[in-house]
Length: 454
Image (cartoon, rainbow, N blue to C red; front, side, top):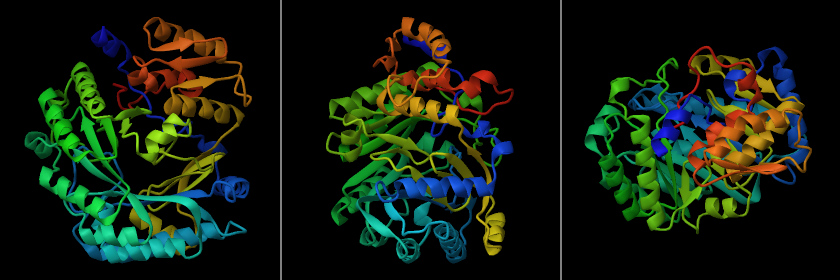
């Protein structure tokens, strides 16, 4: 039965870190002025009650991991650190000019690239520069992505000293054959060392990222990786499907062929085995492809229906405004999205002219805002309703028709004014969200845009 569902629903689809998804952003109705106005509106509405989130993209890596679809710059020249930090701080101060009061920072995340490419001193300088003109929320959360091979005690201590209490390490897989294929040679001892160092220093949440569906990866490889992960017992886990998108220019997914990847059915078996092994030691499934121990804030947030999802992934709390700094970063005002230029030289050039380095975006209309809420509900709570918050819209009956077959397959339950995803349907939540995605329904892509849903 599982294999037939996989074959039926394994289609290309968005991961829904936003709605509308990036390929459907309307450039014709977007402008830098409109983006600034949407952010000023959001900031005024929410800064004093929620605070804001910051995402800072640090793109440099010393070597290329060939599974990675992120924006990065490969270099061993660490002289790039100082000018990049100066540029990020310049961008931050340009944003500050839009606001009438000091921003209250609730969340801050360093992503990459490899944030620990930067020296501990430079990372501390960056964060101090960000915090100087701001105020910290009472319950703030700072987190960063660490590479187990180069995250030192000095990195962890320096970031701890400026407020970081959460770190996530990219593990991917412990098998040497798989590691060679994705150019990520990373012994278990390195992950163990980095995990234990974080705990010794006082980090309250240590996460691991594990990927299934990688080239040459077998069911035994996933079992071995999960068993080693259980020995370290990270507080939270991202256990997600490899997104094979080699058509995206410059993402580096090469060195293996499509035929080297596990089949969709094998990928699902890898996930189900991993999920079973994690449940045995107390991990709870949180949203899509995420797991956490009951003591972790992410689990508590899910159980209290406060889980949120944005371009940083799942977060334990919501802020209406999220500002992305650095090349390729995406910002979200709730009423609009904007994305920075992807090239470092273009980024520097715009900032040198005192211009925010935005090159595209989308201003949400009323329909977008309603559907966004439904998709967030499904991704974060596995259910949605149109009985309150004016979430009914005229296409609901058509959506329910599209979902009827999924109900017959046991993936969800349809009620008079709501739907709820079943446990069986959770692996297919992206497919369920696609039924609500009116932009996707109106204009199916004629080119490869998204990874497969299974």
